[in-house]
Length: 330
Image 1 (cartoon, rainbow, N blue to C red):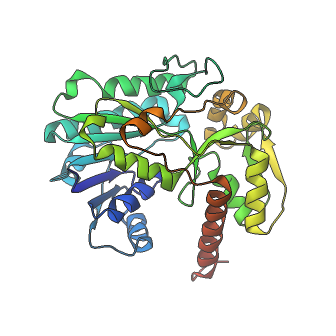
Image 2: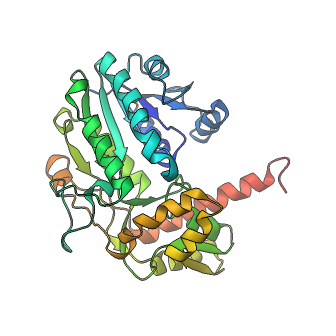
């Protein structure tokens, strides 16, 4: 039974929706992040619920995690590191989380992506048994994380990994391919879209993902495994832009960024250069099978793209409007 949870990376895109879903179910939740002001903003956005506790700390510090995880049943590890720091920081962060969980003998749900799968073998949706043959450095590091996470060293902790495709939603930020695209469209500004805009790709709406993640976390039989968190199908960049522009009422240009553009931007923004090796996913998209989830949990929540993108743009517009009205805004 899940009565109390700790969410690491609380103010990130996935952390925020997981917290909202936990609170909706009446589960006491500890939001853990680096910045108390950011955590306080999150709490205010959620209505300052009594069941939400804020804890500031360093996710690389086992003692900080131990302090925050007292009396919790599950740790949701949704903290992340920038692409350009992944090779040096992902595993140390995971080690700190697992050391704390193992000492306390509690469950851990790690939120991850699809990079360890590597290239798809055919056009069929891939399930959790798909061979993991990553050919990118980020995919290889992510596979190392999985191996560390399920290591016998942590015999006192129960563990599961949820794997999300590209995602979007009101809480998605620059860590999401679509985050900055939809934010720019909502603001009525020119935008960039990473990858080929004509190829249909899978995206999951973050509120839907949160429902699936929590549903798995409350089931003892889900632990010790990987789980796919699929979206509502596939959609092209052109259709995403069409829906988003209709919702925003603005039709400023949206430019597709490929290898050359990302490499150039990478001179000034290092993380952009790191996206280049992942562009294969925008040409040969990986689509996740949700069959395993359906067999164990039930129907997959799948908000239609028209609705999800519209809700996202409207929420971003509302947020931008509030920010513009704040004292000191230009």
